[in-house]
Image (cartoon, rainbow, N blue to C red):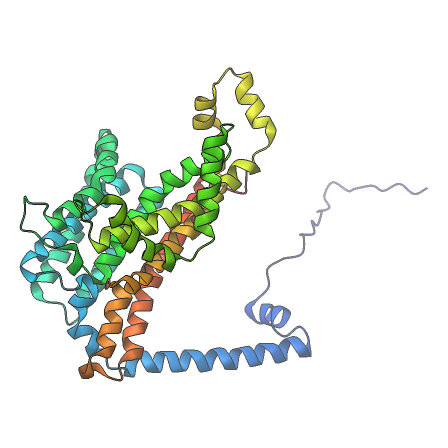
Length: 400
């Protein structure tokens, strides 16, 4: 057998592994034109996509957007009195401060929310039909956003106060808008536009989550009274459409409260949306509770934890993390379903758009109005979806 000898002065040629990177033309050939059928499908898809994009951009640049410019205030805040618009700006200013501090203190998902809201302000600032006073206020809010961000990075002790103000933000906003006797009264029946959409959606999302959490825990309770009450409530609410719930809220709530207590149509719609959403969130959370293996319960009991501590520190954090996509999907559904309040004589963003379309002065402008309304809904729904994905990544959902 021959021996293989290596000479000391002879160089060894190391063969590198084959490159896995391919050029653009090779990628196109591999993925789009790998066969005659794949190539034909690619060409047809390109023609259809190009046709849609061409007509879309042609509409955007040739449409008459004056209906939006003239009625922008109505679309945003409805018939809210012009003399009291400072209340809306005050609420926006408080929101800007909270977003800036949250961005500086926690970064992560809050940074994406703050930057997105700031970008929306910049876009509004660049709109040609925006008044100079509005431009100055928006510019001030943008500066305030970055200023509070800088302060938040330097003062980590502000976390607890910022959380407290976040909890009180929605009640504070409703108080400022309504007045409740301390300020000039502004009836909630004249609230409208995107302002009303945001208020109803925010209240329904924030209030329905703890109610849904309690319903999910109650459905798994060992006490028959609590268990069957939660089961009947959840199944009854999930078995009827939202429009029915809104009608029941408008007609039945005053009967239960009696003649001495009066609730505005807006508050009744908030109650109906909250009760409806809570039932669906309860089922989402119950699914997360059932997804946990029995070993998690046994491990918590082995540590000597009672049921309260076990649920608070072991079970619920894992269950809620598992159902983040389902819960955010329900939040997005709530936001879009606010358009149904037009059935009960409330004028939200879509309802205001329908009123503008019915105006003889703006006949033939349906497409412009509904495209704008749809774009506003898309921005905020996509923002919620994006924050959800970021939260899933930061919590390691599906990874560990």
